[in-house]
Image (cartoon, rainbow, N blue to C red; front, side, top):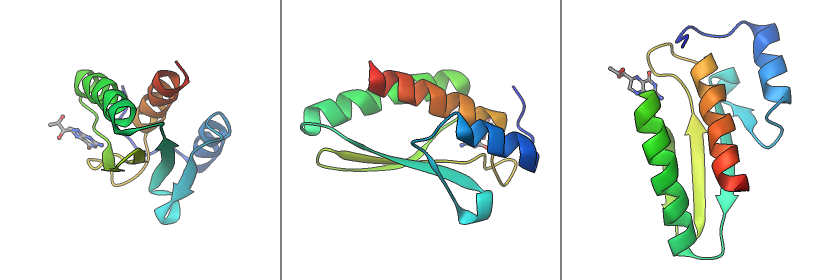
Length: 98
Ligand SMILES: C[C@H](O)[C@H](O)[C@H]1CNC2=NC(N)=NC(=O)C2=N1
């Protein structure tokens, strides 16, 4: 899967398909906050995301405080957003949505 930075038009189209994510850092990353009922649910979600990310060899930047998980996606090798970030975002949304 491509680890090259996405062109502006492709980036805008990809973002439209992930309405819950917001672009940050001058278009270098996308971010979303996930809130759960408790820590156990938040951590279970993180475990599922971690396994998926490891399979993709593409890893989130994230933090967890109690029942909140903040995720930032960017491709370090490319210094910006690539197809991999949007594929991972879609998979994360699917895990969250059940
Ligand atoms: C060697 C290995 O494939 C790379 O270091 C991978 C690992 N996970 C990664 N994750 C993210 N988010 N960006 C990367 O550029 C990246 N590179």
